[in-house]
Amino acid sequence: MGALERMISAGIRRSGTASAIRLLVARRRVSILLYHDPDPETFAEHLDYIAPRYNGVTLSAVVDAIRDGTWHALPDYPLVITFDDGWKGNTKIAELCRRAGFPITIFLSSAIVATNRHFWWTEHPDAESLKSAPTQRRLRVLADGGFEPDREYVDRQALSQPELEGMTDIAEFGAHTRFHPILSVCDESVAWEEISMCRSEIETLVGRPCRHFAYPSGDYTERDAEMAARAGFSSARTIDVGWTGPGSDPYRLRCLGTPDDAGRDRLAADLSGAGFIWRWGVTRRWDGRHPAVVPSDAVGPTVEPDPLSVP
Image 1 (cartoon, rainbow, N blue to C red):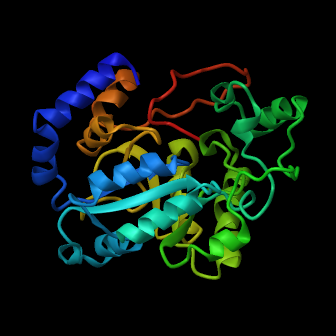
Image 2: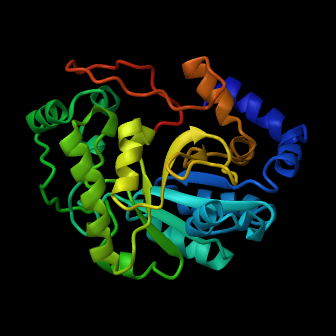
């Protein structure tokens, strides 16, 4: 985080703006937090900030409230904690949330969890440059560096089957595609296979319905939202900045992303909607939308990296 972001974050928290926004905006709207693989000590500090100010709810409760018109049944200051990908470190985080009484949703890459396969972006020195490459072009570049999606490594990055089974009391498991491609640069057949197959694979892994989907890196098109609905998901979470309300589109749920290593000032600022400011720095728009990745055959950055866009 740069000096300007630190200054803005500190100002939002210490001026009382964070408290005012929580009261005026977040009391009857849902705050959805997004993490990946935070350090347990840092995340414990986040929970220390969150627990006295918010009430943990499940993503299913939120989506059901939208669909059934029962928004009034949600508690004040509702908050959903989500994790993307399915990193093995999430087991320690789940224990912290269990103690704090905060349910979580983990969006799993179904062909990577319960294996020793690696996430593709960990195998390239400039993964950001590959996000805009069509799937086959990206895979060829990765293969030239020795990476194959089906390769089983000695070390494990993702949650194991026993770890998944041990988290069912505190975690809902959603879908995050099979191998985490960037959907907006996938052709239709690849996108459909990634979206539809991951649902059945996760249901087999965890033995319960998989209701929710999250777009990898937050990239999605109208086609992908329609596919998520057609595949039978009840919702899909984006990384578009904002809160979720009773009139929200279930397949375009907004979130309040914060870095895994955020300090208390940054966490408070992001819960207050500072993501609109960070996003404006990339898009020069105030709508909070994540900028779409444009397909390109060239390997090299085609869009300025989005500070909220993470694998």
